[in-house]
Length: 276
Ligand code: ARG
Image (tube, rainbow, N blue to C red; front, side, top):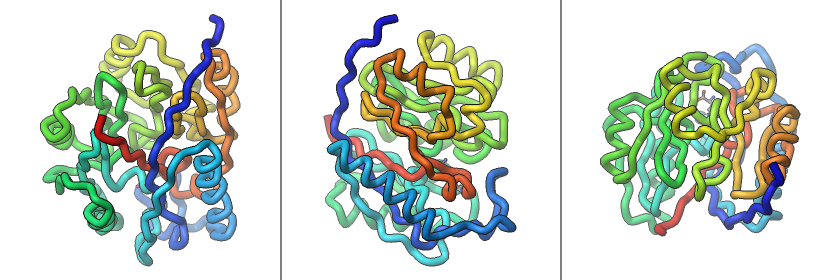
């Protein structure tokens, strides 16, 4: 396959500095409160990611971190924005519950006219991935089927529910990444999904880049693409060549301290999709 040139589209992202990032509780298998987090290093790694987005010409908006909400750095979970419309989050665990309101307040203060406070548990872009044709939606650990229905009704886009079965891949964005949201190109790790959901993915995305276990285990699917540059954990080396072969520019990032909370590039990045 000859790689064709890829175009990057400018993006607007929402991020939250890891000022209060800690691992004080464990709500996913990556989190071990006994393992210390090196906060200055976490901050430096997060700043690298933000600076990389800026260098690529993207806009980065900042959400104020709040004390007592150590996971707030994982801004992807706080809402889902499609066509400029905001579907708020409702967290599965009490430890993160107040983050949802912080996000809704940010959107209200930044000129987003339509903000829906959801009835059902959904952890924002942790479990919703937007392609041009569908919204892919994870369930099994956090977001629920009822939340998928709520998202479909709110956005008026077809929502495809996918069952996550491995607790290490507790959010959809730990197991699947959208590479090009204009052409329905994705990469994913089949082992994270039920057999039926794997069959659905194979049918929807016959040309998907299939990740192998070591790259998935390095959270390599927790990636952000602007249609050309794919920012992903540096340790997921096995994905770099296949991405290049498809014409993408992989950009390796080290977010090792954030990984102690169970998140990486995508978890730290919420995309604000404009009205089209
Ligand atoms: N500690 C956080 C949690 O378990 C990590 C969230 C990671 N975010 C993501 N988009 N997968 O909720």
